[in-house]
Length: 482
Ligand code: ADP
Image 1 (cartoon, rainbow, N blue to C red):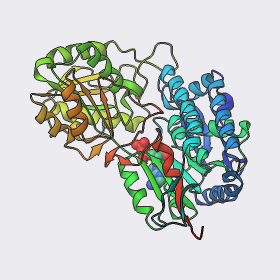
Image 2: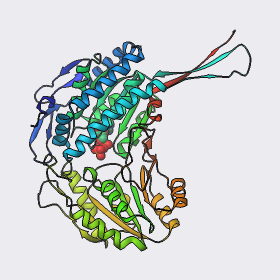
Image 3: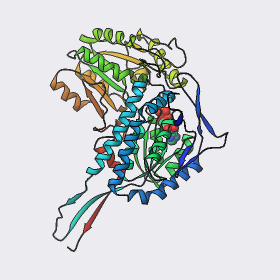
Image 4: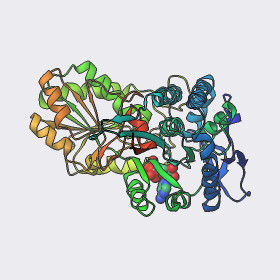
């Protein structure tokens, strides 16, 4: 088990206690590469979620008034603990999620980097002293932790998505209730263990696994939870935004994407193919910033398709834990079925399969890395998030045409552009309605920059100097009579 057995924790962390359920109250967690059982985590519901919220409420006065230097030290120690345990944590992540080990190592590293970033950034969350319009007054603007924060995380990045939420929450002085995805709960439970080891006080981090609906509605209806941060589907995100109305909670939403990847005739072909491979096939296409629609200009179209097809064929497919593997299995059968349905629909509507197009010979939930050309706007693959290793390629002629096509979606998370024309670079930055834009780069997420979508892709930012602001309430105090 590559040293991760100690992190297969079949219990939840609530108020500093690890609680196990009755035998019949558990969720089976399997390894998507082998189908083998990894363990069973609690299937907790409303009662345990309320207990977790109670613990976070109780811990808040003490934790929020800890010296800032002590909160920073705890974060730095958590960062170190993540990196000291990078190998077993990466192996655990691959076991429950399926991604190649190299990607899991990267995810643990960027998760640790988010924690360090917020440890640094919180020291610069300055207030203001605003000039008063009249003499005898001082106008103070100050930051205060919002209170209890609930974090709901997805299965595609079970470790680093937690880092983006726990990092700013803990830095700001908030206490937390975490609900990880049921497919990949162990990475989050491992964070609970490490946080305990580095000395986080009981109740500051609580982790509850179980029914999303029950845990979600308990979080949403409790007025003591002041902020909810969610990464997942647009459908669930919209429901949570609706549910947040009654208790007027702050919400941050990282939702779905439908990223265009635009290659102009003047692009550097090598770089465009290299960028396409990473923007498309990382995590077997299961990321919300994955290239979903390739738009390739007529003059470079055939050369790009040829090169991308060759590179796609050369991908090493296998179990994420095996050396050299670049494409792991999809996370579960329904993920596989969805990808297959989108590919079948595209092909039946006239798309051409350049390579792949079906389940892989390895069986299970592996899908062949696929390139499709002749994609048309009406196909469902052009409108829905593919979340699989499928490059769907449109051909286009003009800049105006491709900008209109790229923006013709409810989503607005990531967009990629390959061009060597400086003027066009700035026009794309201006015109593409996306929260993240990569020009001549296929992997742009970094702790220093704000990550977040426009339109139906979300609300709020994670990372960057912006990523902590939503975890604060801002107060204005007018001191008169001076
Ligand atoms: P994904 O496509 O990533 O599975 P989901 O939105 O279904 O996206 O799930 C993301 C996270 O949201 C998971 O932790 C899941 O358990 C949780 N979730 C799903 N439905 C709800 C809900 N109704 N309320 C709260 N959380 C939910």
